[in-house]
Length: 594
Image 1 (cartoon, rainbow, N blue to C red):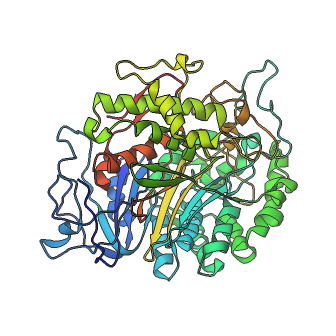
Image 2 (tube, rainbow, N blue to C red):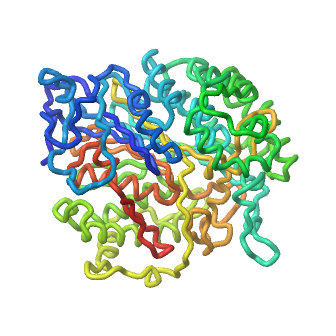
Image 3 (cartoon, rainbow, N blue to C red):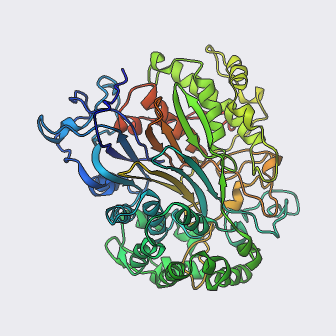
């Protein structure tokens, strides 16, 4: 049963949890506290802090599986003060009694934690603390999100970035929602068949090396968000990242990702010089300094994005391109701008979901899936039952078939947006689902047998005491992108050109088989699965902020977090720890966590 919040409650209480698993997410979740009675109740909980950094409490939980990305969840129990009058902090938490089945065998030993003035959830303790410090200094959620993103570029270089791109969802306290696209763009010299060999086969040039890089958008996107909505001076927001670039203690996470990527990094002199000093992966606890990156950030602080796109840093990028046979030019950098787009919004069982429109495929694909799934009562069918898994997998299969065929950069092709959002579409797709058998993907589109799950993106969520909320998903695509560090600048460039259909009908590194609409084109933004998402409850209140890395699995992961809360009544820990299922149409396989 859903519990409504009393309107007499004055301040939202924010809840957080992490999960050491691929991928990770951040979620706000609105309910009133009541006496806990489920397995998630724990005497290890701390009282609500006005400024809570989820990394502070939950870092040990994350270290247990340091080779994976942490799954962080940010939760808002809006309009309700924590009740600490009965037995300490435990009663500040709402538990979903009876929704956490005893037969679950995965770890769920973390508990939701609370704060009243602001919260930041990231994959890194340093970055989280930067965001919290900005909030404590009087900054709003956008200030904190920008500072956090820049900090991640320093301490989380396998995914956090200056040389990549992403998407940002912003919901102001008055309920207005904005979607910002700072996705990378193909250089002007890009050609449709640039990644094919003489025999027409796809090479690895879209994955490794200088040709793999699209024109970076992160710097412009963060600056533009701050210009429009920030409250603190730009220099104050950038300074923490400069300080971190001066030196921080190496984390287990950084070591594990460098160990996994070191062979590729060694292939590029500038990359190895920065990230493999002495040809070795730094040790946990070492001080890691990035003086070149500190200089780039200092120029960013003093000159804004002009330096990155037209100044000294732009010249360093262009020189690196020329040195390695890349095609990004000074003109490409000068012409880059981020774009404000109309959010992709849809209804799910009375809740309003706001996510990114194309060139993110997340919002429309989630809408298609949710509208199909809504034809069944998942709550009555039960969590993780064969019937529920079947309905979700078949809905995933159909929505991904249409995603792969129709979605691309809206500035270059006309998209069937209304169809993805329509009831007629959902009815027609749902009518083809049999509850007695799985539909072979070959009956929907031609099939293949390739799949690779990657999670080399990062997501973070921020909310402030006024109720402003920000969700950001950002990436360099693969771990450390194309493994190319810009000489003299100290940051990795992305390899997001692989997100185009290098050869339509042939799978990319995530196993996605995409169509002609997403073929390589000069100045074009490549399709993405990144899906930062904000959900409002039936009364229009901020309810949930969610997002995740995970390549092709992003869309299904975000949706299952939403389903777990709305349909199955889970609290944040339960929703995040619950094993998930994934189907992306091709390959014709259902993937399970267990």
